[in-house]
Image (cartoon, rainbow, N blue to C red; front, side, top):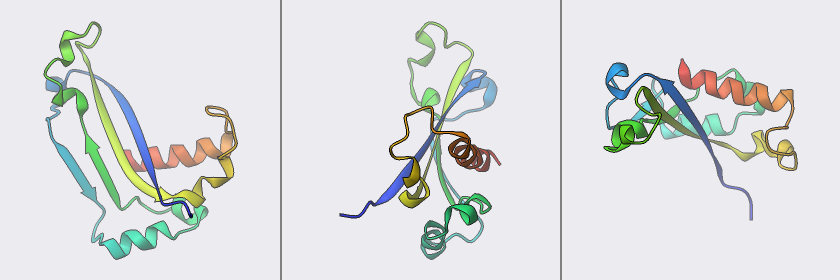
Length: 122
């Protein structure tokens, strides 16, 4: 069996309440300009180097803290919020690190994950 699509998740802690930041209890699907499924399929076929220089064509963005009516009832959460960003990728982009220990995969892995995170913030 060959690997399927890779799920890429970014979990972000935000300073500021849901109200201060204007976060809504909703999900957002963000598509790059003129993204079609054909365009997304082409993105998934890119090699690692080209992928790093290509805008991510599809992102799912959500604010779990805004959806949780009990969020601020937990100690220490009064002025904090959360954001979740999810997209899909190609397993081949990450395969070389499959045996590397978590949180110690090296500078080249950190560069790839930083580029993906930065792309999701632009």
